[in-house]
Amino acid sequence: MTNEIDRHLGKRLRQRRRTLGLTQQQIAEAVGVRFQQIQKYECGANRISAARLWLLAKALEAPVGAFFEGLSEEALELSDEDESKRRQYA
Image (tube, rainbow, N blue to C red; front, side, top):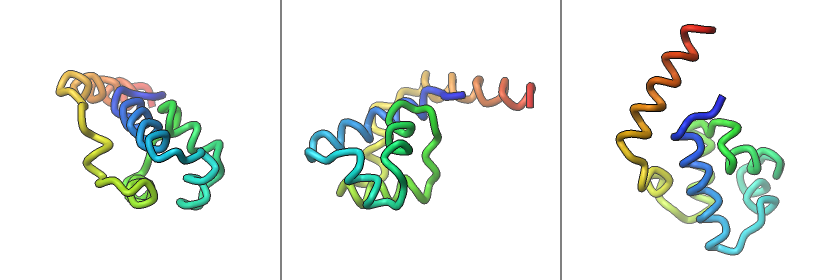
């Protein structure tokens, strides 16, 4: 289950990677995962842990906060609702 925050982080990850002209394979090697995992991060299918986000930020020469830029309060509220629904059915 993805939420707005996961999709936003993935979008920002893809934008930064492309800006630097790097492939998914290059980023994957830099952080110790397979390129398929980067694909999943970029589409928001998998959540990025705090530790992995820190490694990605380092590999992409960007502050961690850059991945959260542009994230609206509305998206945060929707994500909170998604999380509470998920917990109800878990």
